[in-house]
Image 1: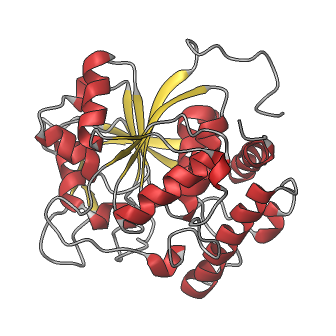
Image 2: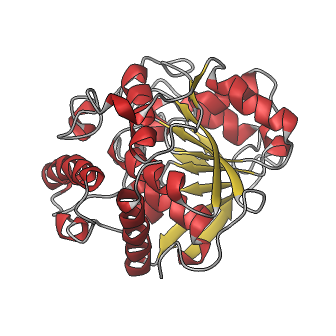
Length: 331
């Protein structure tokens, strides 16, 4: 079934969402789907350094939104580095500017201008919490620096958001950055720990769930023959090459759009979940920092963690929605 099947959703019935991104390749796919999903009211996108440096994140985010005809979505610039540590980036994974073999630098100027808001990301999220308490869902697809900054600025995310959903961490699956650490958690462990300690995170989609689905270049051949589909293929082709060398698989994981779909668009695709009291290691030991672990601290709020997805149905849903996104005429 197409995401467009059925009656159109009115703006009042669509779920208000802010995406927090560090736009590399899988964030790009998530942005395209979020910006065109009829169930979602994309209130804004906040940028954080992670996969690539902040200037690349901001440019990629703005250009992707314009390419899909959503230059109206406000983009807020956030943290350029983690709360405590030096920034580590993943250009080897995501390409010279974060979008694989394609570089979104000289796209058509007639596409219009992105509305970059002068309000920093932590304050942008805080303003939504203040004006619309309990309404907005934040889907965090990178390091949690912007959310940690909001907490440091006395924003009550736990009660102020409808939900904070995070793609991050790993429970039983081997880490992709250290043996027990996933990239988003390892880039800013202090922010992850701050969010967990304050009960801000509602649901986590760790590697245990997002690596259930492997996407190949054959999967993308079914996309419409459009300029935007070509950009997506060129980006994902780089990602596939990285995963072939790093993981020995003929395909790639698309952690961020899988999280978006399984959390907000098709939660029925989650086949296993657990509820745990979690903390994030913030030690100086690089081998341990960023590792999630279970804790018996009674004041910690339990977090729901997706541990398995239906791989075939998740892949089909993502490809259907991506085909719609890249086939929809801008404007």
